[in-house]
Image (cartoon, rainbow, N blue to C red; front, side):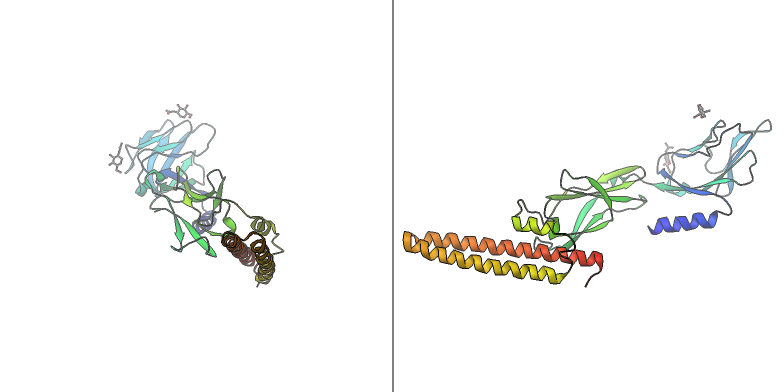
Length: 299
Ligand SMILES: *[C@@H]1O[C@H](CO)[C@@H](O)[C@H](O)[C@H]1NC(C)=O
Ligand SMILES: *[C@@H]1O[C@H](CO)[C@@H](O)[C@H](O)[C@H]1NC(C)=O
């Protein structure tokens, strides 16, 4: 973003003098600069950092190449296209062209970019202790960007998910329980590279009715931490009633069947499952409220 802003500022500053484009070239590859000129070229002068690299004047000066780039440079006299082969990072800089003695030269800011082929891309999760019961965790699409910029970041949720453009760092929470993996992609003008899929710590195979319900709540409903807490209170209340019913049921069963140990064990397991479910759902409701507060700035 800062780079784009800086470049637009540069473009603005440069406008009164010349129109300037940023042209990316692949390091080790060719640089092609096309002045998009139509008509017969009667004279052409390409300059690099203010020094002439190629010059031609019809019927007067045959096409000749000068300076450090000589030997790697070619100019097509039909189109005016300048081609320089085997570009290195340090070959970047300002190129200008004057065709048929036009008053304003066209200029290009050539910037070298390396292909991402040899760059490892990784999803890094923080905190290190990120766990299914954490409130939220951050994922960073990590890559050493030495000479590989500018890049864009993309994220894919689940193996079959769609790639979506995003920031380098994203946040996941209990709300993101529905997919198993998360993968990031880094893209620059000449290449792209995917990370290995990272395991989503919040992933849950099945979803209970309660959690589906919370997920379907509109943002208005869980717009504050207070609503989330109230929701949790209601659920705890419901759980108490449910437990009481189960305990009563347990007594009855025990009275009639005399198989106390097995039944009691079953009931304890059931109550433990309900408690766990309510805890998870509460966490989800709170994280949803938290996210809403974050987005809408409510307190
Ligand atoms: C110049 O470019 C034109 C159009 O791309 C192409 O047809 C022509 O062969 C090129 N000339 C040379 C000398 O490469
Ligand atoms: C390309 O340039 C590098 C130095 O920048 C040089 O070592 C290499 O030999 C060149 N390759 C070709 C094919 O000219």
